[in-house]
Structures are given as structure tokens and as C-alpha cells.
Length: 456
Image 1: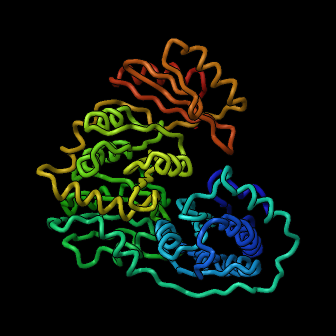
Image 2 (image 1 turned 30 degrees about the vertical axis):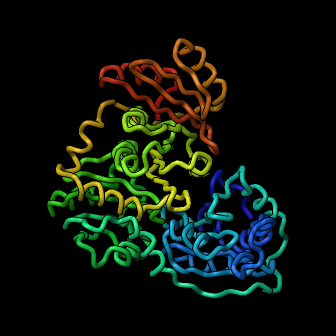
Image 3 (image 1 turned 90 degrees about the horizontal axis):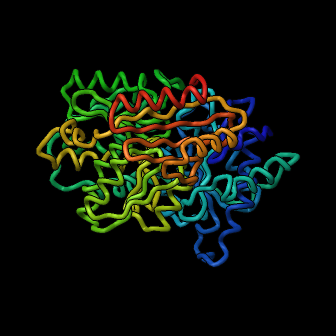
């Protein structure tokens, strides 16, 4: 199998040349061997503890990929609980609700329709990434010479829709006012899950791209501004209170206000800070280091403890667990919750945003207004072969600032700051700059792009 499909946090490639049924069997076999090895000291006596959950998204090739994956797992003697076509956050719920030793979700998230892949989780839905076991799974899978083996593990189907709905809606405040919300499911899993979870509530939903046709009307990536055009138009046309755009597997989302303005995910995190700290005083809140300074300012203002963390869901989830943080937000649109097994969830984020807007005396644009204190560049990519040398040059040139190397190099000044970090898989440097004024941002952006070249 093609080793290039093994990424930092998951397995992903094009179907059928890179990701196919043969490779799925091998990934299943490797996962079935590796994940149960963590059971020492846990509840081996439970029937489900020596089992793996398997779920899949709506892609046309996901059923056959999932079936091959299941057979590979069963060949190791590990049992399988097939939870069907679900959003990725339901996999995290299933692992914890059923008490399995892990699970595998067949999905390619926000990638185009020709892609597929696997997101692997361990005990308690802890992420399996390059530093936490994915390299071991890669080693086992790529060393397998055949896809033969007697399926000694059992398999059973399990529909957790009712239990999952109950889990998500336990976060909804009981006195929610009537609201109108536009939701773009991006032809992904939100198109299935939103009606199942939110039907019957005092929330009118304007559905956009809820159909599963095997294609995407737009790339299922809400971080790309042009992909927000349908939900923005629907919000304004239908006079909605707010709108959301989900990615393909519904673990990430972007928010737009009632005027159709994009709300960056760091501002969404900042908006949630008083909402959580009022209920859980003095708690820790985690955010990724690309995020606006406004988050730390809001956390301190409301009596919490800010924790700045590396980019990536495995680092964010570990930071939440280590600090028992009440929630965390990432610029990519992942939002994590202590009461959701420290895992991210698009549906639970939707619930919390409904609570915030429903309970406010002002529209969302006015709630966000005071948080738009800084000007930022957004993340920009530059092709750089010798990434470490360039970052060292930045650290030297800007040595009069406050420097840290948590993830790449971050340099802070009173009126502006930047982070420059390397891609895990490509010869790219990713740059984020924030400043107190638009003029200062433009000045520093021009200064730094002169050193990095033209952005991609």
C-alpha cells in the first residue's frame, strides 16, 4: 500500500489508486492488532472492551471501504461494532458510550469526492496520530503481504442515533426562543445528522446542500471563504438569526452572523469564553497559537486561565485533558468540550451557539463587534525548502520581540505579533500575523512576505 497516505493525524488519499479495499483491510488488520494492546489495566471483562467501533461517511466508496476495514479488524480476533453512516464526532461518542478500545471512522473530511481515508481513535476516543500510534499502525499495515485471514472476531450493527441525540441535546438550554438558522451541510454528514437531532425544536432550519449525491456542490471546506457564499445568501434572504457551514464529516463548522458576515473561529472561541466561565468559574480554556490575542484577554477578564497550545487536534485534546479545561477552540473550526470526552463536536458547538444567541438581548453581529479588536492576515502559505533555516532567520531578525518556539517561531510585540510554523508534510511555511491597526498589519505583512516570497 502507498505509505504516503499516512499523514500526521489520519490516513487519507484518492480512491481507488491510493485508498482502496485492499489497503482498508490492511489498516483494519493493523488497527485490530494495535489498539487492543492498550487494554492492560482497563476493563478487559467487559464484552465491548475488546471491540472496535467502525463508522463511515456518505462518500459512495465508503461502504465498501468500511466493509474491507471490518474484515481486516476481524481477522485479528478483535470484535467490531458497526455504527453505520455517522458524523465523525459520533464516533467519539460511540467509543465512550459503548466502552470499546477504540474506533475507526472512514472519511476524507473536507477533501473532494475522489478522496477517502481513516480517522483512528483509541481508548476514550483519544486521537491516534503520528506520535501516538499511527506510525505503528503504518508499520504493521505496510508490512502485510496479503489480505487473507480467518475472520474470528464478531461483528454486529448498532444504531446509536437516539443515544447520540440525547447526548447532544443535553447541552441545549430548556428555554430556547424561536430562531431561524441557515445551515449548509456541504453535501456531507451534517445533512443527515442535523434533521435527526434538531427536528422538533423551536428552531427553523433553512437547509442548504443536505443531499448525498456522491458529489459536492462546493468543496466541503468551510474555511474557504467562497464556500460560505450559499449560507450567507440564505441568511440574508430568509432573515435568519445566524448561519453555519459544516465540513464533510461535520466535526468542523464556520459561523456567519445575521448580516451574512463571516465570524472567524477565534472570535467564536472568544464569544464562548464568558458563556462557559459564568457556569464554570476559574476554569481553563485552551486555544491554538494562531488565534487572536482577544481570546486570552477575554479569558483573563472573566476569571479563567488561558492555555495556548500547538496546532492540531491531538495536541488540543491532550491539553484539554491535562488541564481539565472546560472547552477549547481551534482556528480550523474544531471546538472541544470537557463534557464531550474532551473531543470536538460540530453538533454540540451548534447547540452552544444557539444558547448564546437565544439568551442574548442583541443580535450576533453586536455580540461579536467588541471582539473585532485586532486585524489579522489569516493563515498564508509560502513554499520554502529549508524551513528551519528560515524560521531561525526570523528569530534572529525579530530578536527584540518576545520569542517562543511552541510550534514554529512566534514573536510578540506590544502592537503586533506573528507565528511562522512548518507544514508537517510539505515544503511550506504557514504565516499568521495580527496587529492593532490595519496599516500596521499591511506594513508587517509586506515586510515578511518580502522575506518569504509570493504566497500560494
